[in-house]
Length: 308
Image (cartoon, rainbow, N blue to C red; front, top):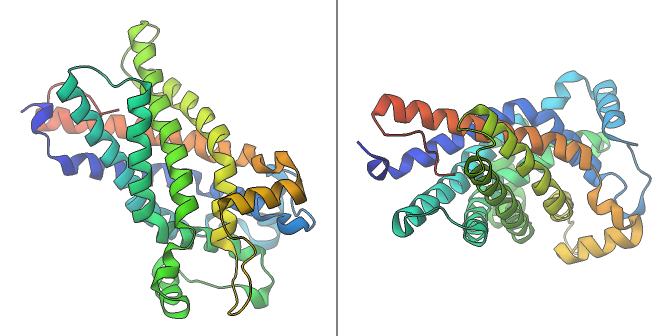
């Protein structure tokens, strides 16, 4: 059996499993990142001074288990978004190599990453919206909390109370963020990995995967955080009938954040975001590479290529 005959669905399954595994580890940091991004919204007083202050206050006020609020939504997000984006990217990557007999260059990798991100984020937007709401709920006054009991409770309540299409609220900024994230993350990982191997600095193995993914996580954090803040605020906002929404679009969020909170507020929660995205990137790629290696070994596929 060869790489060319490997079923396409395998890339999707392994991509989803790698994302779920990574999310179970970094979920507390994702919660902190969300809380910090909506802190100080509209010029209000900041609730947290930094990442560690946020962790302390959340644990003190809501308990240690509150750090894992929204885990069911986070897992469903990986099962939809990450499964789709990594499956699409690795499939496109493999197709490119088969047609050209060479690894994709930076521009090709970025184009494939943007395509995979846009498709994956559209599929995963309901899970993303539910995750934002569940992780942000604890900071609201008791009377205003949504009190979702789990992913499916949130899914059915939102569809019933706000309409099915509301599950795709913030879809445009989510797709924009995903295109930036995946163009940066997947392309930088592929290119860093190829460079390290071609320059003989590192050989195929966990050391190579770790180094390439750490570089990828840093690039992705810096590039995508402003768009992530816009997405978070749009998906978390409450819109009463007849009232004007606080934000109209991604650009509107960015302009208002700069006006009321300053330019560097666009990178608010950088430590928490990188603390979440960096390890998540590392764990996702390492788990994906290991799963691919195990699959290839036990299914008789030559090599240990992951399509990345």
